[in-house]
Amino acid sequence: MIAFEYTGWPGFGTAAAMLAVLAVTLFVPSVRPSRLVFVAVAVLLTGWATLTRDDWLLALVRAAQLGATIISLFTALSALRNAAMSSSAILECGRVLARQRPGLRYVALTLGGHLFSLILLYGSISLLGSLAVESSARDPNPVVRTQRTRRMMIAIQRGFASTLCWSPLGFSMVITTTIVPGANWAAAALPCIVSAILMLVIGWGLDAIYKPPATGTAWVGETERWSVKLRPLLVLLGIVIVGVAALHVLTGVEVIGAVMLFVPLLALVWIYLQPPPADMPKGEHARRRAKDFIATELPSYNNEILLLFMAGFIGSIGGFLLAPMASAHGPDLTAVPPWMIVAMMVWIIPITGQLGMNPILAVSLLVPILPTPAEMGIPPTALVAAITGGWALSGTTSPYTASVLLAAKLGGVSAARAGLGWNGIYTLAAGAAMTGWGVALIYIL
Image 1: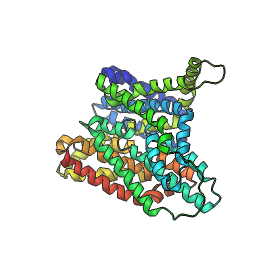
Image 2: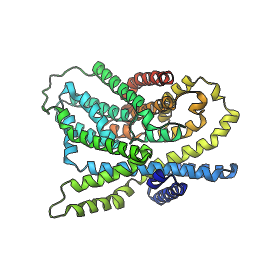
Image 3: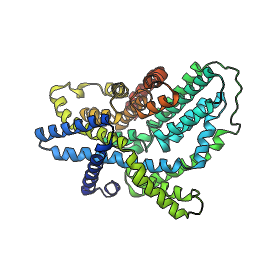
Image 4: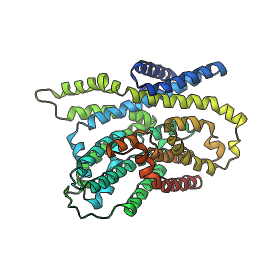
């Protein structure tokens, strides 16, 4: 995929697609039975396309290539997460955030969760969530302990979800800019950062309104400013952003190609710089860590890799098959006001998330059915902001997403409770703001 991104030669893209299909095929015997449903759907759609469309082969390659893109990005980010989780400085950053005094706890965790999620994605919820549970467990009052755990997990959830609005490392932005004609991250970044700010501010406001009254329980925690202790994380983020931006500017490659190349190299250098075990040279330590990552850690993600690939593949093939049917028998979407389509995309993704549809699947299935931004006469960025905003809302509410499932497990509640139960009002408020902002972008840009 790196070779394809930097050269544009279709042969590299086809080779990556074939390798992705091979990898997923090898994982099929070892995944959970529930994942095999997605495999069966993919096979059925492949047969349908083969029997009914003359251009089926091109569509299959394009769908597999989308899956390969997702796997490649997942691999790159997993490499960086592997390096981060063994860094004592990064772990200390998370520990400091979880031990802030009550007045700063939500702000620290939601902003810190946002920053951590830019690097670790779902790993940020595992890291910060476990540290938050560890911190709240010290309170002897079980009621206060439950309230603190819930509030901290909500802050971490919302901090993570807000990155889905704009992060160049996130699946939301990568998939959306890939399938929305004319879209690119450079143009969408600033408006989508505004979306993230809206989510963060609304979350903070609702926390201020609904937070439980002070209990009088003594607080024991960090006294040093958390902004100071976050310096290692901020330096890491600066390196990632500057490195990816430099590659993008110098080579002209899309941001996803820059991420695929720069992030694994940064992870390897970071591991090399970390203290090795006693009597082991740094080079040997880095080599062993790289070998373990390739041979042990990546195969352990077999369920995740298969699900991510299938979400992209099924969505792409499904959109390919449904687009002409929708055009021939469905409503004429070109007659629908563009602002209504933009508003619809904010809400349809979290709604389908409640039905178990992965956002990757929902977006790659629905967007090809829509008129292009050029046909609607709107800037692509407006549609991108609406889609990524809806994707972010799904990340806080869908009981089937990894973020909500992790929060539920760490918080000791059901996924439904950690989703709509904790974030129902927040979703309505943030969704209204996202809708207004997405529609406003039609006229601003």
